[in-house]
Image (cartoon, rainbow, N blue to C red; front, top):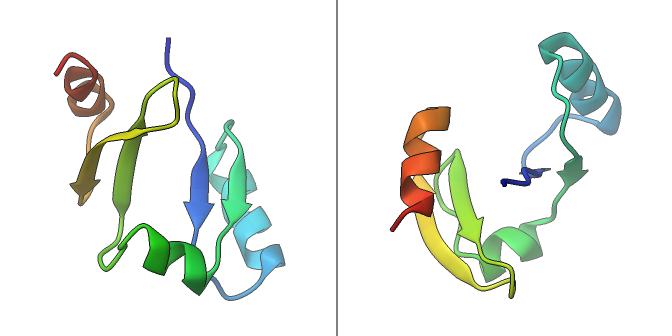
Length: 77
């Protein structure tokens, strides 16, 4: 079982993000982040993916595009 959310850190406007979500048919929550959030999680490349466990601990940090299969394989580690 996997829950996905997205946090957008660099964006033109809220409307631009909403248009992109609609155009791409994204069906998971998409939130607008801040520079402070990027700093706290040490995000310095895009995309950055974090796998978080049920206790909200970061288990893996991955930089670059990943396939669905690749992300699921990380869950087994």
